[in-house]
Structure formats: structure tokens, C-alpha cells
Length: 477
Ligand SMILES: *Cc1c(COP(=O)(O)O)cnc(C)c1O
Image (cartoon, rainbow, N blue to C red; front, side):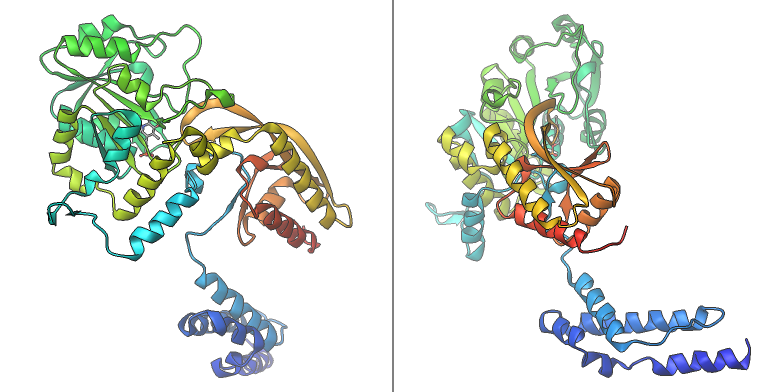
């Protein structure tokens, strides 16, 4: 290092502003108005340190001059980033209604209001108001679940994985559970029937073949060791072609004739028939119980459209045993889940109301003409920002998915707005929109960025327009 460069390096270092000086800069003062001082100070130090390191490390010394205004802006932006929630709203333009990565089901307004009401005050979570003493949290959603489904008893736990685990641990620990090879499902990598079975202490006894399992396969596998016959919903795949599976009617009849229980993991477990909206008929929880299942389990936040929960319905004695299992305490739900779930379930008393008030059902049931209109409006709003015509914007027919491991490959006809650009690749547009505030999540098809209007919420079109406006205001590639 020669003396010349040392001098200029020193010179640059001397130009670096002090914290106090930066605190007086307008962007930092604006940040201080809504961001805790601690975060702003931290951001200032990190920003200045970064520049200092840069000055010291570059060889030869960087030919920059220190711009206080720019440093202040950088520090303020860093403070904004540090102050962001990690869990925050995004725009779901994927068309996947129950998107597990994007929070699954949106709660109905009735659920949100109930959450506020119950959580703002004390409540009778575990207090028996009639008797004036300690009660059970498990009574709360149970009454409405029994009323809607006709089940003898119900229990709500943390999620469906917990429900399956608890049922197996309670009813089949150290004993065998017979499952068809065609139903050994993996959901999202972390839930696999064989693994949950092993963790619960139950012993998996696979029968049949991937494509075909017959009643005699279950029959021949029953031994002294058998505790349950189990059916698992093929939530995220479909076996097609030369196939056979045993219905719950047949399975329950066989189980009961041998003094065994029949259990079904319904996965998404709808309480209403969604087939009128172009989706295949899937057994509802009520139908599975009617067919003879002693216990059924399903998620609260898939097709049901409520909060994350695992719902266990079935025979009183079986549910009682689950409630008494000490593990139930580790899987229990809190008051927020119970409040939101009870409010969601009450909407099912009137099916029409459920379809209009529960966002998950409403999105599935949205008429195609309405989707078409919304797509045209959105395309027009984005076009209006594209003064230099750098985008090719089209309304196209496409397909939405229910998602969340419910009803695989069954696509709902929809309309999307597709955007293509000679200036940005679809991948670049996707990345820019994803880093917008709030982030926009869409999908890419054949170098076009697609936005499915089915999963857009009120106000999302304006966010999309702003996000495109921000994109178009840059010339950056
Ligand atoms: C989704 C699903 C689960 C897991 O449910 P979570 O509520 O996500 O825990 C289990 N079994 C089946 C068949 C499913 O579809």
C-alpha cells in the first residue's frame, strides 16, 4: 500500500458521518417515527460499518465519495426491513385455494370477530359455568361438531397429523393396523403414514397391491394382533386404470364382525358436497361415519375452511379413550383455535351461508363468468400502467386447484391474467413481484407470469396494479 492510497483511504474514513449526524437526516427521522429507536441505531451502525469495511478492504481504495443522504436512505431501508413482521400477508395469485405454503384457509369474518371477542376477555375455556368449577376445553367445539355431523363424540387437536397419531397411539399401540398398499400416502414430505404409524407405536400391516386391494386381503391379514382396519384418503395422488379399493361400508362390516374398529383418515374431510362446482364426489365426514367408520379424522384448515386443527369424530368410547390419553395434553388446541373453529362450524348450519361466508368454499364456488369479469378488470388495470407497452397482457382460460392435499389433479376451470414482456423474463417478473410489499405470489407458464383471479381477495387487484407500476417504473432488467 503506498502512502497516496493510505491518505485517500483515511480521507474517506474521515468523511464517514457519525450516528448523530445520520439521525438528523430526513429518511432516518421518518423511520424513527414508526420504528423503534434501537432498530434504527442498529441499522445506522451496520450501514456505516459496511461502508467502512468496503473502504478498508478494496485494493486500490475505492474511488467513491461518502454521500450522507444516500447512507441515511440505506440505513432507513435497512431499518424498514428489520422492522418487518416475518409472518405477513401475501397476495395469492396462484389459483391454489388451499395453499399450504400460503397459510391454507382464510378465516371467515365471523371467525375473526369471534377470535377478537373471546381473546380480548377472560372466557370459560376450562370452566364449567353451570357447576361453578373446573371444566374441559374439549366441550367447546364438540357440541356443534356433533350437531352438524351426527357423530356421537368429537375431539379437536392441533392438526390432522396429531389426530391420526393420537388415534393410532390410543387405539392400536403395540398392535397391528391393516392398511392398503395403495393408501400409504406422504403429505408434503413430513407426514407419511408408515412413519406416523411407527411413531405412534402401532404396527403397520400392509395389504394388497398399489393399484388393487380387496376385502379378502384385509380378511386374511387379521390376526390376534390386529387392532384396526384403516382407510387413508389418497389426498394428493390418484391411482387410475385397473384399480380396486374397499369401501368403508365393507371395511366396517368386516372390522365389526371380528370385534375390530374401522378408522378413516379423510385428509381434507369436507362437511359439504363440493361436486356441484365441478369437483369429484368425495366422501364427507358425515358419509364416512354413516358408512360405519368408528373414528374419522380430518384437517380444520383444508376444505373445512377453518383454523389449523385436527378433528376426530366417532364413537363415544373410542373418543373417550383418546381424550384420556396423556398425549392429548401435548396435542391440545388453544382458545384461539377453538373460538375460530366453533364460529366456522356454526356457519355450516346453513349450507348456503357456509358457501357465501367461508372463503375457501366461496372461492371454489365462484362462477366462471365472475372470474372472467375480474380477470378482464385486472388486465385493464395493469395495461393502464403500461404506458410504454413493455408488457403483453392477456386474459386466458386456465385451471385452478383446490390444493392442500384435497382432491388432486381435479382442476377447476378459471381465468388468469397472463403477462409477458420483451424487457423482463417471466422469472425476473416473478421475482420482482415476490419482493413487492406485500409480496405477490403467482406462477410461471411458458415464460408468462400468470395470475389466477380465483384466489385474489378484495383489494388485491389494487396491490397487483401497484406492484406492476413499481416494476414498470424501473428500466432495470
Ligand atoms: C393433509 C393430510 C394430513 C395432514 O393433515 P394436517 O392437518 O396438515 O396435519 C393427513 N392425512 C391426510 C390424508 C391428509 O390429506
